[in-house]
Image (cartoon, rainbow, N blue to C red; front, side, top):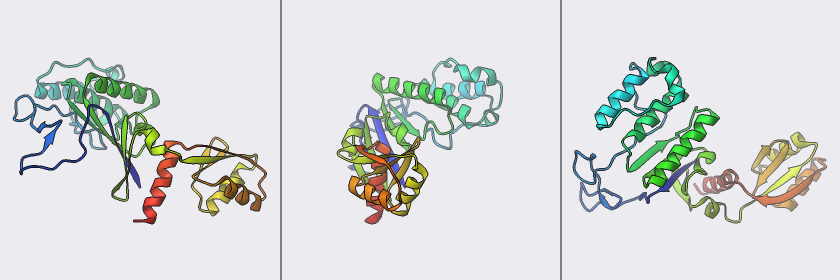
Amino acid sequence: MSRALSTSGRDVPSTGTPASADGWGIFGAPAGLGPAGPGLGLGLGLGLGLGLGLWESLSVTQELRFANAAFGVDDPKLPPALRAVRDRPVGAIGLGLQRQPAFTIALAHEPELLVLDEPTSGVGPLPRARLWDAVRAEADRGAGVLVTTHSMQEAQHCDRLVLMAHGRAVAEGTEKDIIGTTTACEVDTEQWSTAFEARDRASLPVALAGRRVRLADASPAVVRATLSAAGVVAESHELPATLEETVTVIDRAAAAHA
């Protein structure tokens, strides 16, 4: 299983060596509790994982007022999608909508570090796009953004990536750095289902893009031989691999050495 640790905006160190028991630092300064606490005065965005840190018995409006009072900031404008459910309990509005008050709370105090875990899980296409626009705006403002995700589509929104597989970091850099020279062989054939099954039996990394079969890091000669043996008439082309295809290749290599 692969997972991406991604960052945007300000440099966010992924590891550190504490000089003492309380010597951990972020952005080169001691980590603290915020403006009222010791250290850097760091505002942390709420983690948006499968557990959102929301009180499900409070209404949406009450949730936002409570959180913003705790942070000492003014109540933000209610996102349009939440106006119709503003008086309903948070626990009754569904996971996709729940992420919107959680994200609004996370941004309201303009944190220096925003930590997001699977931020768009269960969110529809349009709210997902708006959420990523907001994340990018925070990064442009100067905030550090740390995202953990299994979705390579989410990872592609980030400037730098660290890929983890089988408990180890196996690749890091920009999307372009990680893909490097990895290629995929795309097969165009009317017998696409037969071609897919033939590749699957040959234990080659295979995926469908519409009705085209794509094989990551596969030799065109091997692909043609496998297709011919299965009686498939097809055209094949070698193309740059996608990030997701590259991750599949990296994951298979990591599993072989685990």
